[in-house]
Image 1 (cartoon, rainbow, N blue to C red):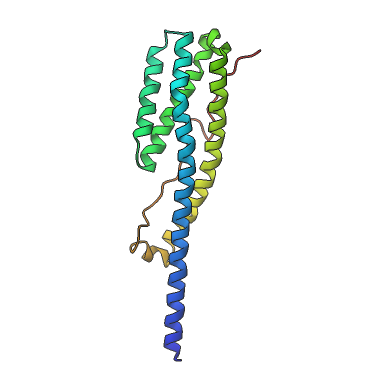
Image 2 (tube, rainbow, N blue to C red):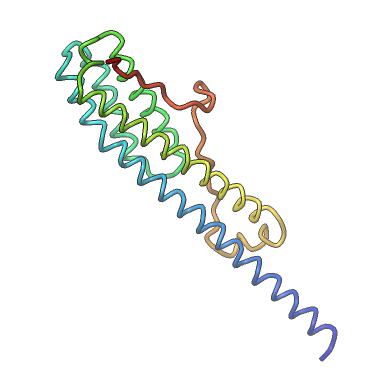
Length: 184
């Protein structure tokens, strides 16, 4: 066996391993995005109940509730991860605005349905943040494999589009939305 064939076989093996690593990194990022998507859908499902709970306690907040319904629909309609992240930031801001209504309407803050929904939303936010950290780590690995040789060459041969980080709104500086709970 000649040295040329050995070098060619090693090169082919190196490219095959790089391809498999790139595929695995892409698939991991996509799988963790799917996990985030499940939690986002759970949050979307709670928004109509939150709107109903607020409407039951106060009719004077129709404009805030209307905006929340609109941003929920936009979040559901978003298709790409980039659009989705932006829409979800607006939805979190809307949910936070509704949660702050409890400060202006003490009866709302004491309503069992409202308090229960806030607790459920806070739990979902925790799950989203945990999944977001995993997803961003997977994206970092995937982007690294795409940018280094041979991945930078191989990405042109397959479906290796970039994946965005799922980042939080900078106004919150990586904090969870503050939800006000009624004091017993």
